[in-house]
Image 1 (cartoon, rainbow, N blue to C red):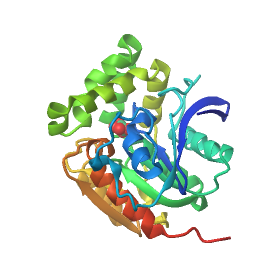
Image 2: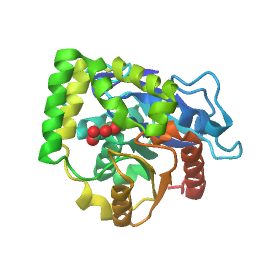
Image 3: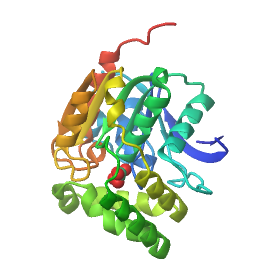
Image 4: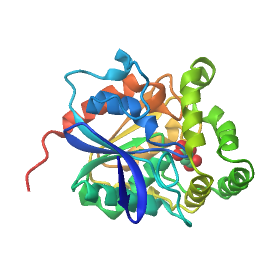
Length: 289
Ligand code: MLT
């Protein structure tokens, strides 16, 4: 599906019925990374889903259903490229505008890594619109000076050599070694998603990542139930950092996902979907206004 939100042509998935669940992808991916969550929670095949969804990905048949909204952020997947600089807040505003377009006031807001930064910004800007938070393989801290330099190197790389070179550099770090070495179909699917991104989209996102604020001071103010999932081998947003974030959020729980690195929902969807279904079940009915 497509919509013009905040003046930008955005592609998105809107599948299933039930509690609205916004899922924001990581850098430099797109909404297809959530295919297994769409399949399990919304009952659809999901964007770019594998032809066969195994039991490990399916989740419990008795599990709660969700209406999964998964946008391609501007410049990624099938969404139009940004025309100038963006910030993490720009992406959060796009996501809120998409929910407005769909008539959704409150949602469970989730994101992986950069998508988690977007979820933090969304929760800071519109706490009442967030029924619950799902944080996957993400960080609260801002970039160090060294990490910022790495962003500017990567802007040079994408401008010189294109998204394929970014994929080549990033892929080994995104996965647990057992995934990278033993499950080429997942790695290739992710490479294809990265290569779909535009040069402008990747460069603008790197600027947004470099300039993002430190979300740590706002963690104690997050009042909604929060589920944090992190791959046990995540080298980019490690479990110890996830535990420190969870300790700061009043109503948060942590799942360390076995056999997974930075892409836990993709590498071990069975474990992530089961935890997400239990989390959604625990939210109960939306209180009536
Ligand atoms: C992501 O997966 O979105 C990126 O690793 C985020 C980052 O580089 O900070």
